[in-house]
Amino acid sequence: MNNRPIVIAHRGASGYLPEHSLPAKALAYAFGADYLEQDVVASRDDELVVLHDIYLDRVSNVAQKFPKRARSDGRFYVRDFDMAELRSLSVWERFRADGSAVYPNRFPVGEGSFRIHTLREELQFLRDINTSTGGGVGCYAEIKRPAWHRQQGVDIAPELLCILAEFGYSTRNDAAFVQCFDAEELVRIRVELKCELRLVQLIDDQNLPSANGLARLSASVDVIGPSISQLYQLRQGKVEPTSLAHDAQRFGLHIHPYTFRRDEIPSGFGDFDALLEYFVSELKVNGLFTDFADLVCQKLDQQR
Image 1 (cartoon, rainbow, N blue to C red):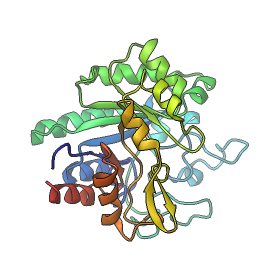
Image 2 (image 1 turned 180 degrees about the horizontal axis):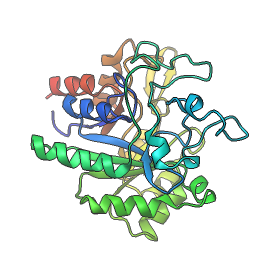
Image 3 (image 1 turned 135 degrees about the horizontal axis):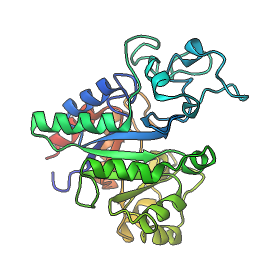
């Protein structure tokens, strides 16, 4: 298949193993993902940690191990724990406030022996496994809540870029992307911090850009990362594209939508295969965030 979309392992092989654990990253690598995603937050001692949220209480046993360390909102924050404490926690499959699994048919909640690790540790792992296999899998890092982190006394963007550079990621030709929902932060990264890496504007319902907004974005970013639902609509039961993909492509922006899940098929699609077919063949997206890198790679290989 010409112009094959890249496969981005969303938090690793999180359809099968607890998200952002190193075993989940290793499995995604084995499945053939092109990039492994790293969500980045800061610990109390300013270590950059790979974890999806600024919170710990939906993916770990923090409430059992440190029951008195919640903030006034009842949540447990990564920023309130040093790295030694974070390493002592068990990472679990994501669960709700009542303890039930967000995805009931995935790895059982509360089972296994998985740990939190730093960004440096993950990038070292990625370097080592690329060396041992002769592979070229890249990293796809997200700066989580940069303004909130600054309020908490740490500016994570410069440190993230420094760590990426340590591992050889500093130009647009390197196998790395940096993503963020905060458009102002991405402009700062491009202009003030002089980052040459490919930048990705993540999009949710709160920051959905107009065509003029996409034109402005194209001056600082290379890719948009919208949710699946923002790229299509249902009219009389028929799937039709919104204007977002066309407008983005018109301004030279690539499109990496999130998140393709076998166990969460959006309305309008009969199964996972039909979902992938539409986004790859009809919308011609350039990349796909997925919890199931194996299934996406299999689908793309069939189309070659």
